[in-house]
Image (cartoon, rainbow, N blue to C red; front, side, top):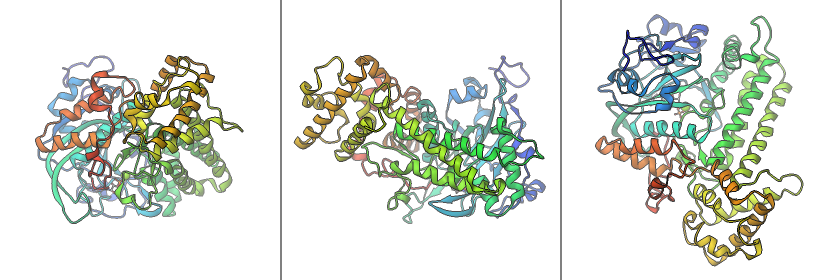
Length: 559
Ligand code: AMP
Ligand code: MG
């Protein structure tokens, strides 16, 4: 183990030798009150003319490490030994400050559920600063749940263990699935209790508190731009735009005496493209974010703010995990790409004062659909095991896909398991389509995806679809092993089903036993691998008891 003062292995850092270079607060204007006295200034208020407020984490009773991500630690140059040091839990629980860290809470606004909500900001998140690694990469570290900030409104600035376990595990699970996302370095128990009314039904109760350290190149959201546009503060809007270009889109950056009229539509186009890739990946793996407000949309097109998210078990286009959204279903599975567009239009509107005319921004917005449709076609072809998507006028594959979605929805079928099992259906090596024993297929290969045994009507409909599928796969030409490999590379076998997270949480809450959290973290490092020893426990449909249990299918925003 390397400690302060000892020389570190090349490229590796210790907590003491992490290099901070905090450009966000160095290059951008801060809240003056907080710069004079960050403790006195830490009261809920409107912060105008500033991008952030300096803050200090509030001490917690007893920070102890529950889990850390070795891959995320490695990004920062931290070894596993470094993460096991008591100093690690103290620093990432907010009780000590790493040298070079200058904590701040960012000011942003946002549209929540379609309505402008005014100033929101980091109400319980605080950035520690930007770490520059030995290879020159920059990572912003952010504690979530480290105490109140000027943006906390009436809330406490804390986070409960259950939501922290969910954010920690899902951030890393998404990374390993190949979905663009913020990362999670650590999960630290605070030793404090936090009071929450989980179902908003007048039953507040104490729960264990925790802090997650999130890691991303930047946490700038659409809402960071929106707040200045809404306040008519063009000067700060421009400063933020120039900073974002310089730091995050350097090839688009503009000399500071030149206008942004060309660069910002180009930046918006990039945001449209990366956002399209992100949401297409969500659809591919069956992830539903749950709260796609513009304050939860990253300018880098990475998944951010894991709250009441969920994974589709039985396929249902209208499914949302968020109880607050149960009647509107604004953020349901099916709506996610369209909501991205709605949010991107909000970002375009926020940039408009700097561009002057809408046309170039409108043109940039069109790139969302172009990218989304291309990625969707590629992913759907791969999910079905085809070398290419046959779209065009015949729309052959679109029809096959839509009919499959119809079947999955009509007769509750597990989205994850179905595609994984479909990969095992013989096509090239089996009998010709008309001779396929589809009943046998339903009863053997596909059976584990069905929430109820197939009815006679279901058998007929599925039989017809399977014959079409086999015909199409044979026509594609790849042998069955190659088709299966193609499918298994995009159809995960293991996802963070809500009930699995909930079981791990209950165990950790009841007895402080985090072994299930560790087990899930380990499992989800290789979501596309067979892991046969994990199959019996984790490659299963959501059990009946979990169908409507709180935390297992639907979640409130309480966190
Ligand atoms: P979210 O829905 O989690 O994205 O949060 C929306 C806004 O509420 C953000 O500005 C958060 O910082 C703030 N917020 C959520 N929970 C808390 C909390 N416990 N304390 C302070 N602010 C919070
Ligand atoms: Mg948020």
